[in-house]
Length: 140
Image 1 (cartoon, rainbow, N blue to C red):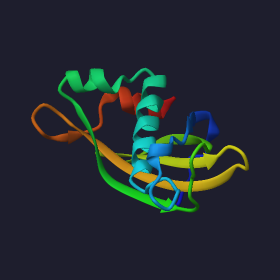
Image 2 (image 1 turned 90 degrees about the vertical axis):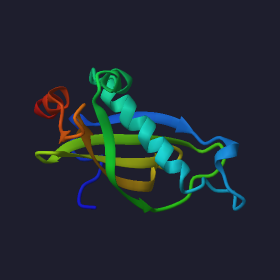
Image 3 (image 1 turned 135 degrees about the horizontal axis):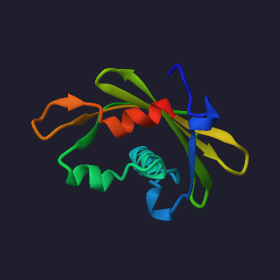
Image 4 (image 1 turned 135 degrees about the vertical axis):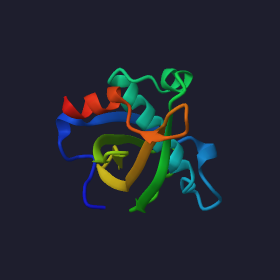
């Protein structure tokens, strides 16, 4: 992964979380699949903070979809850890946007996970595109 969510801080969004006991596996660490939930929620909140409501976009017949997820696990979160997800995004091509996301443990600022999530949108005809309101966010 060539970029991190910490770059270009003026376009970055941070969302705080706390690990819940049921998110941990038998080894006492957050199950690897749970990180995808954290990242997804942070992306939705990132868009919402910039005036793009994920649910409303869906009601309009536009489906924002993940087409590739690259996750680099650096360390494991454990029960009751407080952490934040930093999110920013860029346009990768005419049809793709990329979210760069980092999960940082609060107590010691340790990078726990770095992710590159590639997404697009599908219109009502099933064709990929990037909606104008999302493109406008890139110009801000």
